[in-house]
Image (tube, rainbow, N blue to C red):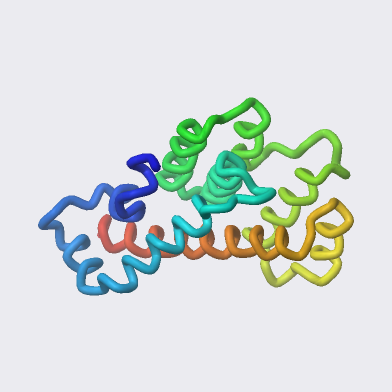
Length: 168
């Protein structure tokens, strides 16, 4: 496992150093910090990645971070993507402005869903889940994708809040 997945990602992304006020604040909630990091590992590096290989997970997380304009997290996930073995297609996936030419592919359906739930979660309906099924995802794949989306969006919001505290 790489250094990027073993330390505390949020502390690393924010550049928090020992002795800083914000790091001390985070350490007061050590259990929450540990649970967040273990959720990161579960979402990005599960023991069995099944139909969502590690590089694809990193690319999706980079894309979501870019959609939110969370530059520090996007850079983290792009670095993770490089470590996991990026390809031209996965670098495209990480680009929030890219869409597959074949709008009917499994990947196109996944990215439509990722973008929708990241940018406008209230608009997601049963029809969006049915579109994932139609693209070949089974229930377990959809739950895996939902978990990844939920965690990365949570992480982005935590980083944004801590960044405001750090910078003000």
